[in-house]
Image 1 (cartoon, rainbow, N blue to C red):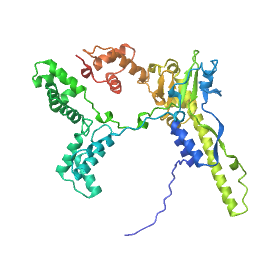
Image 2: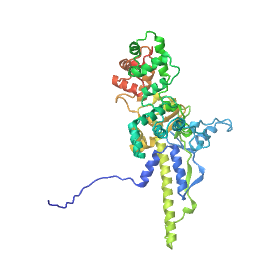
Image 3: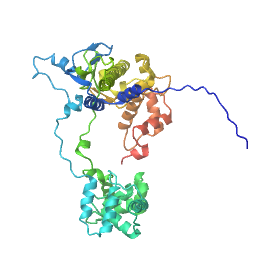
Image 4: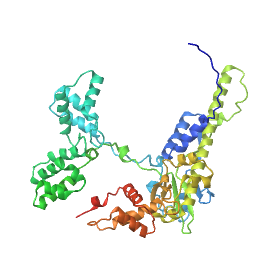
Length: 478
């Protein structure tokens, strides 16, 4: 077989980001707590970087982009005779670093710790106890066991080299399912409800009917076909049947959440707004960046002329270190400033494009807006705007909202109605309907058209599902 050499010439256009661009993109996606942590990390790692004594806690722009030097708190205090007369800002306006001194409740036992303690108190042999502990380690935070017993047995065999007998595996599984809270170790919702019902004492008629409903007619129960269930149970008296339905509804569908399955830091986790928007009586809105970033500068010992070549290798190495660290510090300061300017430009553009919402606080007043609308105001690339909005929140007088909430397209090109206005109108219609005769999707479509929303039935159904509202049959209440 002949072998030949070929030289091919090919022209390709590629774009590669520099390390500085990659770092800026990463910083742009950070929210307030994350960027504060990043600044602290840079201050710890880079000796050429230091924090000035003065802080620029907040920077404020009005909707026209004019910069105020005073913080929002200083502007507010200026309206009062003394600090005692001025109201304090709500907790939602404070950054994570400002709340670092809040006392945290001591952690309680997690779900896994509770299960391990209970397994240690069971009368099990050593091997079965170890298998039960391994099964407990696979239980999710909601209390369910999503993995199959065969997969768990394979894991044990792979890790320990021991094949667990099937009888031992099921004995350990039954032991875990007997623990508290009732329902833990269930494989699905039906199994979870049955575990709770079968452990209820005493076994009354109501409990036995509830067990039979969940065991044999669970599909009909989830679809609210109560008449068909009662007919198949051949119950003449409605009283016990209704009690059984009420008992099933009172059970915990996620038993793991009833235990201390989260640490104190998880329980106290909250959203830290990145911006605050305040509007005065004249409708003029002010945007404030809610961060507590120090004013960064180059440390004085690194602010020297390091371009002069050293006389010996030690001096050259020292000057190279100074030059490297100083350049990194200057680059970080520039990227931090650019990040702040980009975020403020995006937030100001949102306020300009959504003035009605920030003045009234009603989601129905949010106008259709897409990334291109913000790009037209700011001149920024769509990818930059998308990253700037990711994970960011704004605090207003009516609440805290994610920036991406303001992105919504027009359902139809020939309408100015936003998806928020449609959802609000649809939610109101369903809230005001007769629960004994709820509106069908076709009836909702006709009612929405009467309100001025020209929508198809499938569009109304899509918005209803997005709101988490079931169909008319499942909304019916007797």
